[in-house]
Amino acid sequence: MMIDRRRVLGGGLAVAGLAANRRASAAIPRFEPSPALVEAAKRDGGFTNYTAQIEDLELETIAAFNRHFPFVKVEIVHQPGGQLIERVRSEIAANKLVADMIEHSEPSTLAALESAFRPYEPPNAADYRPVALASRRLWPRITAGTCIAWNSALIENKPVGWCDITKPDYVGQLGMRSGYTGGSTWAWVMFERKVLGEDYWSRQAAIKPRIYPTNAACADAMVRGEVGIAPLSYPAIVPKIRDGAPIDYVFPAEGVPCFTFAAGITTVSKRAAAAQLYMDWSLSEEGQAMLMRDLGHLTALKTAPVATPGLDPEVQKLWFADRAESDRVRDAWLAEWAKAFGMRQ
Image 1 (cartoon, rainbow, N blue to C red):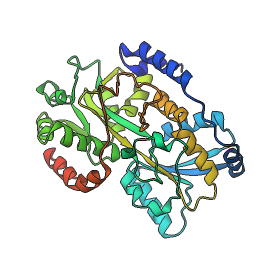
Image 2 (image 1 turned 180 degrees about the horizontal axis):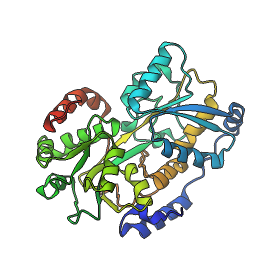
Image 3 (image 1 turned 90 degrees about the horizontal axis):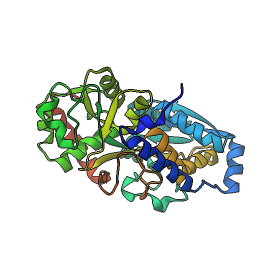
Image 4 (image 1 turned 90 degrees about the vertical axis):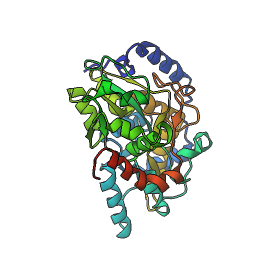
């Protein structure tokens, strides 16, 4: 099926946003690895990546990488975050870790296993925001932000800011992801408490939102019309808009809560060159531009290589949690969040 990519961009932003991305893409420097790394990757032939990334999105990323480096076969082992980390821990304990690369949506969880990863920095390491790093061995290959999305066939009163979705206008129409879903929802929960105020959860709970276990489940419910509006990870709605779903969105001016995946190359990897080539490409301007343009990700680069339609980083600031504070308050704040919404973990 032919996809009209203008639909990804939402409303009147479509044509202007697509044109801006084309202009920006033309100016992005091509990723040029060293000949020695390329030859070593050819000898490796491929590698295994354990990932909590959405499988279809990772397959799209691999396809883009293979257009440049077809000699690297990337095998992915995909599991949800909780199952994946248990697998990694079990394999490490048994001295049977298979992965050459591991990527997880809970950077602190992976950082606790830092000794399982070899020292690694991409060539453009200095271009990344320090706050987005879980450690100097684990890098934010994937960054995503939360927006407010709505079913335009159901919602006439369009929101502008985060406080709008605490208003009685959306009683019975608001959907939400559980705060316990993982890194994406924890970043959003922490942002609400720190930036929007300690009473934000109670104000939102008062309009009785319907709570779903994941981003994907909440986005599906919005498309079906079970709910009309929801805070969602931007990559969760991009494929649906491409497929023609009547979804619009806004990045509120109060800030865009961002979360990152942490990715690293294991110390036991026997095909580390191939894994490094994939990491280097993904973290380069070229790779980050692909992830932003095609999949709806944002970036932890200090300067984005392409524009995200509807997002002006000078107006809607990207918000990254302080890692030490996040680890310190997470359990207590999630418990308070769950109490506010009458949930159990």
